[in-house]
Amino acid sequence: MYRVGIFAFDGVTLLDVSGPADVFHHADPEGRFYSLELVSQAGGTVRTSSQVTLADTVPAVEAQPYDTLIVAGGPGLVRPDLDPQFLSTVAALSNPARRVASVCTGAFVLAGLGYLNGRRASTHWRHSHRLAQWFPHIAVEPDVIHTRDGRYMTSAGVSAGIDLALAMVEHDLGADTAREVARELVMFLQRPGGQSQFSSALTGTVASSDLLREVMDAVVAHPGGSHTVTSMAAQVGVSTRHLNRLFKTSVGLSPTQWLEKVRVDAARGLIMQGYTVTKVAIMCGFGTDETLRQAFARQLGTTPTAFRERFATTAQPQSEVRGHEKTP
Image (cartoon, rainbow, N blue to C red; front, side, top):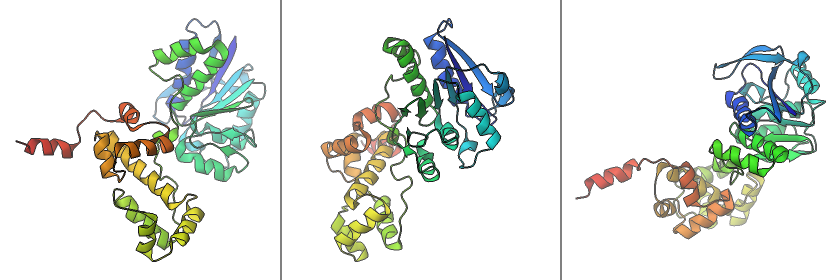
C-alpha cells in the first residue's frame, strides 16, 4: 500500500490538489494500492485560492508516515523566505517519505528546505526565473513539464501536477495502468513539448540599453517586417558585430535567434486565433509554411498544425469573417 499525502494550506491552488488526487483515485478506485490523504499544518478546513474549501484535512502532527508526499502550490509561495514553521512542518512530513514532490510553486517550499540544491527542478514557467535567481544552487529547467532527481520530483504549473501524478502511477503500477488513467482523464501520458507551448517566448527578456530596447520594440511591434541583423544594426547606427554582442550580453541569444523567437511567439498567437498556417507564415515574416514549421520544431518541439489542433480557437478570425462577408 502506497500512502500518499498531499500537503495543502490556505491559499493553495485547488487543481494542484484535485488533479493529482483524481489520478491516484482513477488508478486505484478500490483503494488496494493507494491510500490518499490531505494533510495541512493545523488540520481541518483549508480555503483554496479560488475560495473553495477543502474539509477535514489531517493535522500534520497526527499524520502517519507517507510513502509519497506532494506539496501543492499557491500564489503565496513565490518568495525566498517562507515561514520557518511552515517549512519545518513540511520537513517533518517529508523526512520519512520515499518520494517527495511538488506541484507548480510548491517547488519554492522544497527549495526553501534545501532539498533541491544541486538538483534539477521545474516550476510554473512564470516563476522559473525567480526560482533560479533566489536559489542559484538549483538547476532550474524552465521548459520541462516535470523532473525527477533522486527522491525529489517537481512539476511545472498547475495542470502539470496531473502529468506528475501519472508519472508516479506509471512507476508504481506500470505503463498500462497509467495509460488507462490518462485516457479516462483525456490527458497525454507523456505530454508533447515543453512549457514554451503555453508561455510567451519573450517572458523575462529585458533590454540592457535604450539602443537595444529600440531595436527590440520595433521588431515586436512588427514581427512580419523584413528584419535582418544588418537592418536592425543600421536602425540604431551600430555594426552587426556590436549588435550581436549587445544581444548576447543582455538576452543570451544572437539577434537571429531572438528574432525567430519573437516571430514564433507572434505565430502562436495568430494560430490560436484561427488563422491558417500559410497566412501565419506570411504575416510573421517566415514566408513559407516550411520555414515556419522548422522554426516551430526548433522553438517548441512541435509543428504548427499540431499546435493548432491542441490550442487554437474554433472561431474564425474576425478579419477573415469580415473579408468573407464582403466577398460577392
